[in-house]
Image 1 (tube, one colour):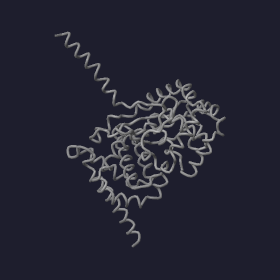
Image 2: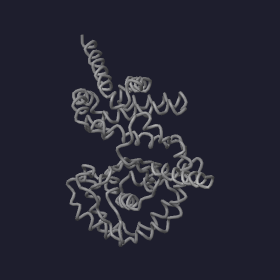
Image 3: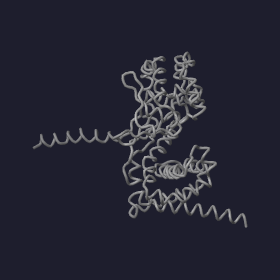
Image 4: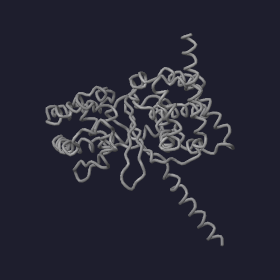
Length: 367
């Protein structure tokens, strides 16, 4: 009997840590992210020329500068000028590429790509990028830096992921994420952080937080302040819970009237941030409010929380104080609302109240 008990305990200890680890987010490096970023760098896209990666930047320049006259460079500059391929559109393509036996392949559906790619001949692009991949001996460059990548990933895990409390999300939202969340370090992205996603046939949708790599000039260390950097992850992971709620036809129809009105009021400021429709503005609003609630519950200082709130007001999310208050009310009444989706009608009312208040203020001024 004693032997059986010991065996069962050992079995439990063996199984449960493994299963617990399955849902933990691991930080990755991606050859296709580096490929698209370095191509963008060679083509002169300023957001991929921040020169913040120290020796890695120097290595990149030394290896790829001789190929600035490669045929794909002028072609890609044309995509940048004519189709606005830049910033997150670059990373959208990157996560839709896979490299198998030395060949770069497009995976998924073109309609899943960021909309700026929709008028691009993907088959032609793939021929050109494969030639660039081969001619530059890109895989050799990538593998020669494997030790550097591994060390940077360990640093990010230790200094940044420490501040990212993944278990908060299902507790707050009352549901498990509807998507698979992945974190990739973009070693050529400097201070740029991007969100991208893909949905391969027969698989769960994957959401990527692609976080830039940089050396802090003050300390000489990679990634700088871990708690500040984790804010990118805190923000992006919320989308895995928030976006599917608005995808629901019921919620979409309920939110549409006020969403359109709010977007009209703030269109100029939102478009400067590349938020070009009411759905994006609503999802971003809820995500940003949830970030502030997260900060309140995870021991951030009052100053950090206030600075975050002020930052959102400066970004034209003028309804943020009311929305944060609404989410805090939801969290304090979980006996009434099991999930945030149950509370969604109240979020709609919160937006409506803000809109009515803004209209009232304008009418008062025009009397």
